[in-house]
Image (tube, rainbow, N blue to C red; front, top):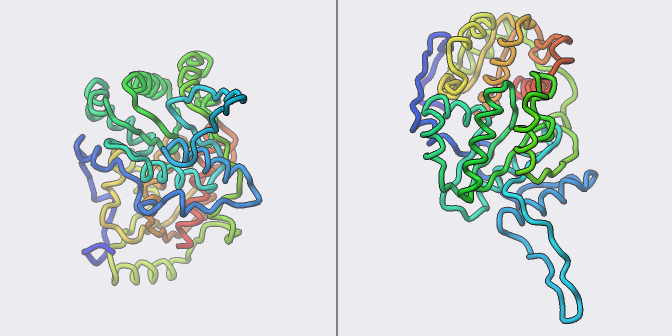
Amino acid sequence: MSAAVGVVHLVDRTPQLSGPEMVAALVPPPQFTTARFDTYRADPAYPSQQEAKDLLVRFAGGGPAPARGGLFRRAKREPAPRPGVYLDGGFGVGKTHLLAAIYHDMPARRKYFGSFIEYTALVGALGYKNTVELFRGADLLCIDEFELDDPGDTMVMTRLLGELVTGGTRFAATSNTPPNALGEGRFAAQDFLREIHAMAERFQTIRIDGTDYRQRAVDGHAVSLSTAEYDAAIGDAAALGTATDDRFEDLIAHLARVHPSRYIRLIEGVDTVGLRDVDVFTDQSAALRFVAFIDRVYDAQIPIRATGVSLDGVFPEEMLSGGYRKKYLRAMSRLVASTLA
């Protein structure tokens, strides 16, 4: 719970975030502070989950070493290890838990954990050269929700990984898209195949199957409240902590004026997010900014209360059938969970 009590408006906030503050924030989200390999519960119905866990334990420096050859037995030749592992799978199968477990369990002196957008935002804030120098010599970089939404990000992340790999930095990343398919359907990927393939070659891809844990006990849509129910919910939340209250249209317009790297500061100290008159998106740029915002809200485990269109219905079919489909589906999953929290 935050120290303040009452109702605030996100549209009144114009947060700033310096480079050093952005670096200090490169740690696992609050709900993964205690995530360890020992606390990951693999679903026996999906053997790939346990297989992934075992591989990642070894990547992080634990588990048994490969068997060595005996006196008359030739040791099995193991493939040369790659500097990175890439967890590919659907939504809610525990990829971020495993990524956080790598961060916590790997005995590394310098390690960082952030979302893809946080790393690219850091480059924007500090400049490419300064970012490389900042991470040079780091033991581990964990990159959650690795996505390439434009050619600029492709080039930046490819160059960054390439320079850090030569210095011995290891990488662990998650995504819903295999690394050789990044960017597919969103821009002229053929123009960047060399960069995309070079990035893929640095990772060992580990597939994790399963069902979304957020939906295992929940089947339905995000909760949409009546005006009276919403007013009561926000009033109750404001009596115990800090609740926000904004018209959906106003918040979406405000997100266009705040850099996504600052969304984490936008919701700082907030206990409940309130959105009035939710409506369907007509602009894809606005929809993608909302996805980035919801990622921060979900990471902070902040419940959402809303009126209007059910929040998992804000992305129209033409958006869901496009290149950003997986991003929207992940956001829908998180929105359902956040309105039920």
